[in-house]
Length: 466
Image 1 (cartoon, one colour):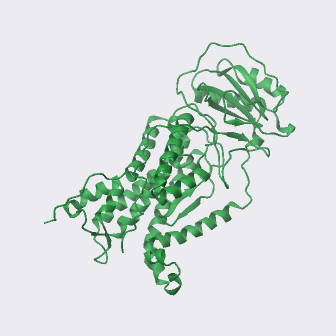
Image 2 (cartoon, rainbow, N blue to C red):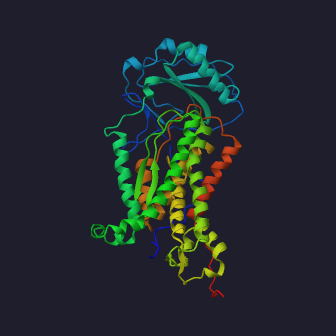
């Protein structure tokens, strides 16, 4: 059984560097949800960069009292991501409430308001942030709770125009999750069934060339069962890790929608975030948990595969050139096999090598810093909205170039563009950076993804093994 040439990731030229641009969109929809314009049944996002423990102290300016009578919402100067839509009059913030927010909720010790702008049922306040963003957010939220109850939601964001903090207050009824025409469990189940089929298809070469042959010989499915189960196990490790950390930090996740792939069985899962994420550190924890766990388990299985002899004495016959497709796999193969790995001389490896490699590829492509992939959320959490938007645009552009030469890259760039390109929904507080230890974890995930995707450039031995 020859290894499919498409197996190793063909994003060989994909590199993580810096970016062009892409700006987000926080949409308060007519029915009343904070959501974004996506494809099908997906997601959330807004725009921001950061400043950690330093206070933003500009010269205090006289307060501009913008009239709230025209709530058709002008295009906000600082947040091009906020796009006005018509809202029912009953859910707009009354003038009296705006006065309470300006004079009793905000203040010199938290956020000194210099101007305000109406935005459909909500209000955007510009001003100067006092003290640390996280503490200010807590103080303002507590005061708003005391004065106004639970009717309104406060966001502390970054104005992409001048990189200064802005406060946004919207009615909570506009934040209800969007419903879908098709029940989530039904859509997720349908995608799951197709994914089960592609996992078998990927692991039974006879089915790839003649699908109808499965009806003549059901034993073919048994041949693909070990590989399908191993890939499913790695997918499960990834998804369960996301959910365990999300539960710990209070983030609600939707049912995962597994994305079938005839090339590697599955491209991972699309998972929506159902509530407002508190801050960038929590987002980073959740986003990094899945690929980090997947890389660790996949790496252990890959090493085990190189150490184990083929169970049937034959294993899988591969050409050494296939290991040039991944720097990580090629490096491990070179270290472990040494001179046995020769250009042009096929070798036999344990099937676990191929199964683990497929799992590493799945985690790597989900670690691409683009859109709402795990890598895109990690980049957003570490570097802020503006930088991550540029990095996302660059990553999608590089994937687009790769797609000219490989169908895997083409398939993936289409999925990102239509389903996962973002923008990421606004977080409650987007100003504060994550702690350095979580930043380090995010960098490790992006780096491991790069090692799996980049090619191994060094030649293998041309000398016959003794």
